[in-house]
Length: 150
Image (cartoon, rainbow, N blue to C red; front, side, top):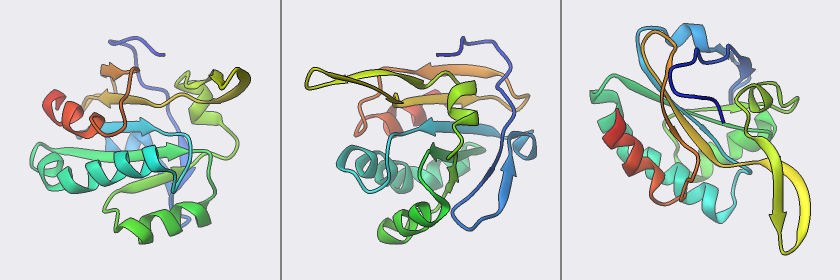
């Protein structure tokens, strides 16, 4: 996990439509950057739908929501369409942002150890500085918690 007060690492990744996005293009806005394991899984769907439901409130507060996983652009497109997600989903198949934000970690599942994305949400301020980190994310509660942080 990256520390509060550090500069958020730059990224350049394709969204669900294949359009490249960089952190720099969001300068001047607050960014909710959330990392999640996999499209169309129960926890990830709950979290995404929670952000979608509250998206107008995030916009009112001058914040954008961006989800990042290692799923493909095509997978993100299906996820967006299945749940009418109004925000950007970035595909990080090479794990560049995932590793830069220190969310690629060892996970234990039923005694089996493997590497994977640890669900983590960062709030980045208008200047590109990390001002809040939620690394103990409960998928269903994260959107409401982050709305309170913005």
